[in-house]
Image 1 (cartoon, rainbow, N blue to C red):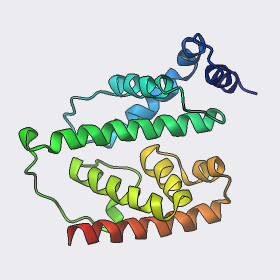
Image 2: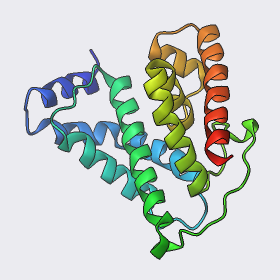
Image 3: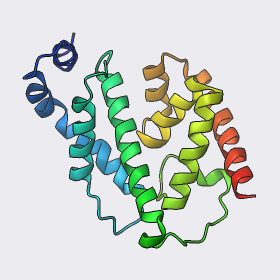
Amino acid sequence: MSEVTRILSSLQQGDSHAGAELLPLVYDELRRLAQWQMSRETPGQTLQATALVHEAWLRLVGNSNDHWEGRRHFFAAAAEAMRRILIENARRKQAVRHGGGLHRTDMELDDLPIAGVAPDDELLAVDEALDAFAAHDPAKAELVKLRYFAGFTLEETAAALGLSARTAKRDWAYARVWLYRKIAQRRG
């Protein structure tokens, strides 16, 4: 059992000091994850990677209902928390008082890669489509979250989900087409 897994277990059992032990062990990795997430955002963001880490940390350890099955599960939860924070930030900026009258751009299937800048309207469209996809196929939606929002490679995603690389590749292709159609449907 890794040190992170041991501390996560202590945290879940109500040890109030476990969070203080955990943060130094995971901070650098959370920071890298946040920097990766922020690199996909449009330039000039007011939200910085450090603030994203801190907000995600507060959500993760502040919610005593969460139970992590280990290190990977914790970091997947951290990626999801960061995704939610970025979505909330994008929605806030889309509000009329924050310049919400932005024009949408057409998005092709190839515009849904795991790398690149994601404008707020695109991020919101992907989030809505992903929520619908999660209702349709939760397992494949988890694969999308790990690839698109956490920046996992296909191999890392397959390992985290206990899939073969071939199955992960096939599920990723299916998910991308499903999401593209849902986003196109929303816009059309």
